[in-house]
Every structure is written in structure tokens, then in C-alpha cells.
Amino acid sequence: MRHTISVLVENKFGALTRIAGLFSGRGYNIDTLNVGPTQDEKISRMTIVVKGDDRVLDQVIRQLNKLVDVIEVQDFSDSQYVDRELVLIKVKADSSNRSEAMQICDIFRAKIVDVQLTTLSIEVTGNEQKIDKFINMMSLFGIVDLCRSGKVAMPRRGE
Amino acid sequence: MRHTISVLVENKFGALTRIAGLFSGRGYNIDTLNVGPTQDEKISRMTIVVKGDDRVLDQVIRQLNKLVDVIEVQDFSDSQYVDRELVLIKVKADSSNRSEAMQICDIFRAKIVDVQLTTLSIEVTGNEQKIDKFINMMSLFGIVDLCRSGKVAMPRRGE
Image (cartoon, rainbow over all chains, first blue to last red; front, side):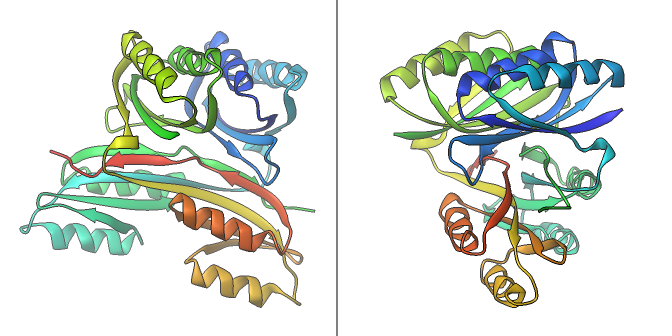
């Protein structure tokens, strides 16, 4: 099963290496991972999307909780959350098919961030399904470059 | 100086641990890091934003290039590139100040992705300056939760 794990950690870079090591040591497939600062500059948030055995993941989460730098671990697979991903994609498009590419961008509310004579660079955000569908459509033009941020996720309920 | 490093790696998770280790071993501060799949499912792209000494970074890049799993390393600090970041942010906002928060979102072209009686969840993308300014404005309402994807970057020129 697929899980989205959110980890609050103290902002020491060795922490990332240790956390990444916990997953790879268990042979866990990581689909995406990202880490960035939070409102407290001493604390970073990591969002990790993993696929694999639920029982093994329980062990990994227990071990995560034991790491000194880890403040909180949330498994979003079983709770309500909002998630989004950002993708930058560069596709082949020239005067003959640029308007068709722009039409598809319009439908997906994607933004064109750069244009060259033979390429278009596009920014799109959304949930996984939307992103996958957009990349699928764009692959018809020929993908030159693709850069995904990985999923970021946040619980719906707050204070 | 601040650098944005883009690394194409074979999609083996041990690779992430090794790459992260190279930076942390040198005492390098990592601001953000993300990793996700590319158009070729066997290859992932990592984008790493680091601060530190240029000479040490040159060494790190040379060592990165020696890792078996690493296909390509680009240092975007000295070339033209497009970069974007995605942020999910939850702020305190109720009936008394929700419309003011929504006004600011409008100005920044941020999207509201969830609303509760006392909170607003917002999605915003942009370059670093825009993101920093938006977070600054939103901190006036009180930030409940903040999740940043880290920078994704792509060279302007393609094929």
C-alpha cells in the first residue's frame, strides 16, 4: 500500500541522512521525498511517499519516533489531508503545435513559464491524478525535461 | 553563496542516502531538497539548495560525479534556469478576517484549498522572493502549519 509520511525534524542535515537510511535499510521504495523549512526556522518538515508492506512500515515509523531529531511523525494514509505536487515540464512545441499545447495547459490551469523557438516550459500543480494525466497528455509532444517536487501534504484539521 | 544543484540519479533509494551523506559529511547546510521521478521511471531528479563555501562545493560536486548512481550534476548558480517552489500553508482566519486573507491570496494568485471555521489552507507557487513575501504576509494571521516542497529547477535552454 502507498503511504504519505510527514516528519517534523530538527533542522540538522544529518537527520535527513539518518531518516533516509531507515527507509532504504528496510528495502523500502521511496517514490518522492522533500524537505524544507517550517515557520520555525529550527524545524524542517519532510514529506515522504513510500510503497510497501504495512507491517514493515509500522516498524519504520516506530524507529523514526525513536530518533533524537524527530519531533513528530504522521502517517497520512489513514487520515484526512490535503496534498499537492508541483511539476516543471519542458516539452517540444514549435509554431506548428504550440497553440495545441497551450490549449491543454489552459484546461489543466497550468502556467507557461518560459518559451523558446522549439520548446515550452510549463508549471502545473495538483493532486497526483491530475499531475499524472497532465504528464501523460504532454508526453505526446515529447518531454525534454521533467522536474517534480514530490508530494507535500498537510492535515485538514488544525488547531 | 547559495547554489541550486540538480542531480540526475538512478532510481535506487540508497543513492539518496549517499548523496545526502556527501553534503552533511562536509558540514554543508542544506536549505531544501527534493527528489521525484522523471519521464524515465528508472531515473530520478534531485534538486538541492545549499549555502556555503564555493571551494568546498566544487569538491562535493566532483565527488557526486564519481558516484556510480549519479548520471549528471548541474550547478544552476551560474546558468539561466527557471525555478519554482510550492507551499501549503494553513493560517488562522475566521469570519472576522477571512475576507482580508482571501484578498491577499488573490494578489499573490494563491489558491484556497481548504476552509474550516477558524482556518484557511492555501496553496501558492512562485520563485523564492514571492514565496517569502507571501509567508511574511500570512504570518500576520498566525501560521498553524507550513509545508514547503523546496525549490525545483530546470535549465531554460533545452534541445
